[in-house]
Image (cartoon, rainbow, N blue to C red; front, side, top):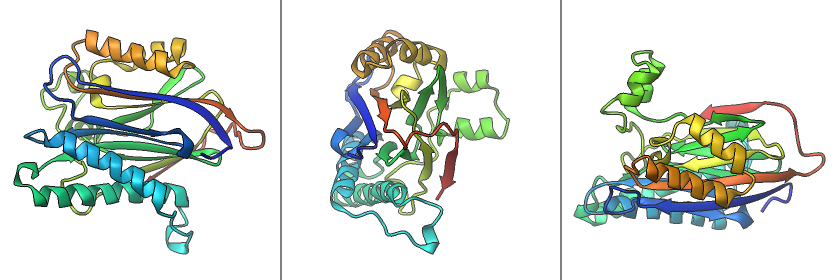
Amino acid sequence: MDENIRFRAFGITDIGQVREHNEDAIGLAIDQGYMVVADGMGGHNAGEVASAIAIDEIAHHLSFSDCPAPSADNAVYSPQTLHLRDAVIVANAAILDAAKQDYARQGMGTTVVAMQFTANRVAIAHVGDSRLYRFREGFLDQLTTDHTLVQEWLTRKLYTQEEARNAKNKNVITRALGLLEELEVDLLEELVRSQDLYLLCSDGLSGMLDDTEISKVLSKHGQEPETAAMLLLKLANMAGGKDNISIIIVCVDEVVAGQDDASDETLDWFD
């Protein structure tokens, strides 16, 4: 783990109230400073296979491969962010390969949202509709943009927020691991501040609770990641628990002297 950032984290995944299987998976490695949520999809329980492959492959790549060397061709990206992106790309290839080996698993896929601390920054990689939020000084910001049909319509101003919330096709995703050999991964990197909170979640949480409800929990309990995560899980299930629910909460206790930066600078790249 990068010693410039001291943090605590807790993660949990739950089947919810409706589904017969939990196709979500999470990965959390405090010593290496990374967290991952994956929400699988596909028949014959293949979704849980895809999400498990994603978590395993990302963990293996981050643990046993080197960051790419800085070069003029990738100067815009930090090596750590590229390393995280490459881990997601490797996971995509592994899912496609597994599907080729088993007819029942063809078409399986998964979302991924992943973060990793490095120096005084956090690198984020994202595909699909699993989300990453940052709670800072009382304000909740969604740092990822959903890769969904509804989000595209919102962006093009074809839907209002109210129409989007009630849309029957709001769960149709436009990007995921396991669909195409060429995978587009959204990347983001930002400076970390002491007392920042990060929430990674599948749509089983974000589809059940709105930003105001999430903010209330993080405002009151965010400094205790396990308490906050368990309460969010309880509330999502009480609201119907219509999908599997995965939650990871990260509490930044300290960015060491000389590393903390009050700037709001956020770099957003689309590879």
